[in-house]
Length: 268
Ligand code: NDP
Image 1 (spheres, protein in one colour):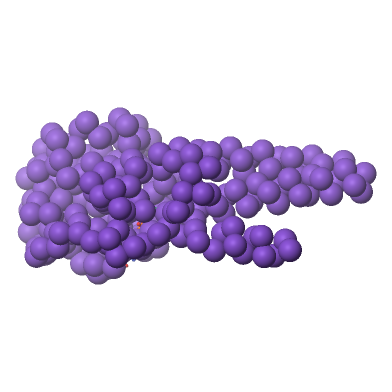
Image 2: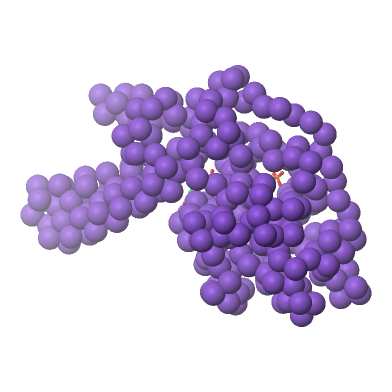
């Protein structure tokens, strides 16, 4: 009975709603451990179960809030439905940029915003990102980082990686702080991010991402999109930003491509 209930409860959930449900189930394990602690008269189980349950509940609500959804809505709202309609979008031509042109564009900019995502973590490119930032700053470019609350695969994922690479914390800006700044930005450099910059979250009511606050990178003058292919991100939703006339795709592994940009910049 429990198995059927669990299966039918989570089976329809997909896309960007999955992490919220994982956090909720994690909170339930704490609750179950705590209740077992009462039954077994085991104080350690009661205390540890309560801690897991409470922290899991807080995390669930924070993640749902970051996606502009209530937990109730995530559970019952027909989430994760990737209907044909939801996938419909205006496609166009993509434009690519070479490492050389990207380096020139970056070095002659006044303001650059770096948007890191899961791909930066996969490729382990945080040290190269920091090196790029320092090189650009030496050339007089003002560099900031835009951190989306669910970028990566766990809360604070980007903050931890960038801190490990010794990026100055004052350069990290949360979504609400940085969104008004994109319109005054020459180049947005998206490094292995996808869902968190997908305009479908704002423009397409049929998209499972609809309602999730995003980094409004399409306001910037130029967008350089670094990833390996046109494959979608975690939510499995195609990204119409690939086809934006301001976007230039820079295909390749993030770390390898950054190394090439760094070596180009050293010669400019
Ligand atoms: P996404 O998963 O949307 O996109 C990551 C992109 O990185 C992919 O499109 C992939 O494209 C690219 N990538 C992967 N490997 C590399 C590589 N080696 N080099 C360059 N690019 C690479 O990530 P976002 O950070 O934008 O969004 C996070 C998503 O994860 C959201 O949907 C969020 O809800 C979800 N999530 C977040 C959690 C959290 O707590 N932060 C927890 C669990 C899920 P390609 O394959 O073409 O290279």
